[in-house]
Length: 187
Ligand code: GAR
Image 1 (cartoon, rainbow, N blue to C red):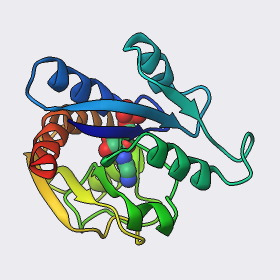
Image 2: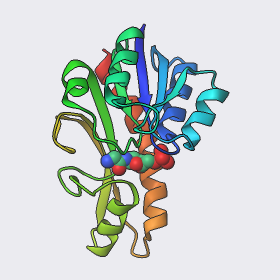
Image 3: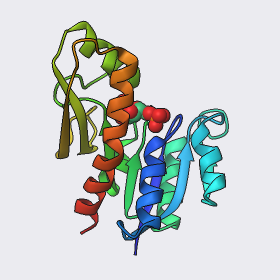
Image 4: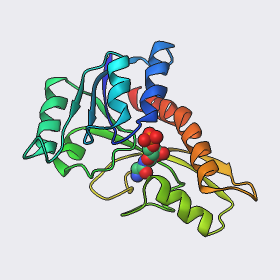
């Protein structure tokens, strides 16, 4: 059984999708660790509810959070690390020694790179009058949003699309995309 670690800074909505897919036998894996850099992150409450081992690691409680993350991933024999809205750049040590995948809320390479995350992505898409957006699940390397793409899912914007409606639709699309991508990675 493959072991997953989920890293999230806020809600970690992809944790729900992955947890449910495991419960429904769609995904043959276990969630060994949930890690957040934010002690107020809702993802930690979910981890408690789901009875998952969880940790907060940031500059306030660790001199080198990434070193501690590496230690946890190693000790728990994690096979795949899933970034579910994790807003910190991971050290090259982690991205080169573990299989790390990220869910990005646009059709990369469009709207990727420094400063392009979460709501900022949707704002830029609306401001540029794009007609199409979506989600990209990709491997993480040392460059922001540049790792090999595992899969993309598209959606078309409606004429009255707002940042809020687009964000909601993309998050919904992410739920199935991340499970599909994990199936590909774990096989
Ligand atoms: C998700 O939409 C995810 O794609 C995005 O942050 C959101 C987190 O939402 N990630 C990035 O932008 C990474 N570059 P959540 O806290 O509700 O799960």
